[in-house]
Image (tube, rainbow, N blue to C red):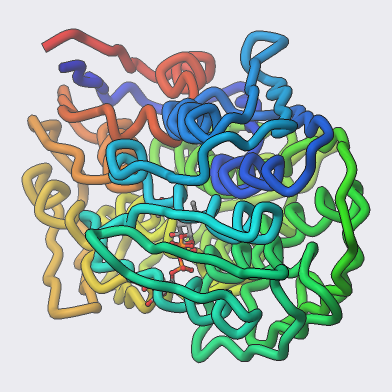
Length: 421
Ligand code: EPZ
């Protein structure tokens, strides 16, 4: 199994291109199941999670091919010849549940394995199921699978989510596009990935209003057509690489970066003493010699501070002046990077959903282990400023969500390499 070896090497300078968003692409791909015409996604990221979704869609009868070195996904779901999403694929990736709404809406039936828990928390799918039930789906949970049917099709409904869920919003919006009548979804997620999904569905002929607000209204149509859609910029990859010069010093331009995707995160970065400026081609992050101040961070649904950047922000705050308090409000078990950062000399006290980080003057390289995607990249970031060598093992997590991480960091002067170990 591969490891990534990072050697602290001083300031970083140059440019890093930001890819299309993993989490947008993972919901845009199942949208192909809604139509018998081709759906083409451009600006797709090249990641193992995208390959897993490809395998899942192919198992259902969809054709998926990659063009332009993997950056274009050409999909066609003309023939849906299997309505069962098998446990062997679903267990690899929770986003697999996103095929449920589209399959049910188009074919009137679907059988999808329950995804089960994962390292960052229990992550149930009850809200996905409740929203579909409100639209008239009959659901039966048996043998670890959701057996869903909607004889005569789904029907428009009013449904209020008890709390905000990105995935449940996506499943419900996709299902509602082909339901009979009007669906009003309240207390929905407002993430840029939802806005991107709605943009794509609209290109396919869906009638949807309210994306980016807390209420989405969908007027069902009889059928959706094909479309070509560019995947939105990956705001989490963007935030991750913005932290590289923040941690190691220097000046890095993030090509394709957009401030509106990360307002709350950027405010915290600036509060910590890092400069962020808009450029013609993206965003520029500068830290020249000055220290980092402690800041408090609470993760929240968009437009709040994203949970997917909490681990990386913690890496920055380990060497800040003062005490930072990080509160994780989205997932119950998302501090597994803390003990690994402590192996590098960080001082962190985790109590339930709160981590108190007392800044130290510097970190030391150490062998550490990645436990999930964002945790792994936080350890690489920490390694950029640590004294000596940091060896991050179990990097398959990293490959789920970051394309060419070594190349991108090496391009700005970091000493990062992948070794077989
Ligand atoms: C999406 O997960 C992202 N994944 C996650 O990214 C991200 O951390 C999360 O949204 C929050 O922003 C994809 O888009 C593929 P949720 P999702 O439903 O949709 C609970 C990464 O690192 N919940 O908004 O699964 C749930 O357990 C990943 O790229 C229920 O209780 O997140 C969590 O505590 C990790 N019942 C909270 O809601 C449900 O039916 C929010 O989860 C659904 C969710």
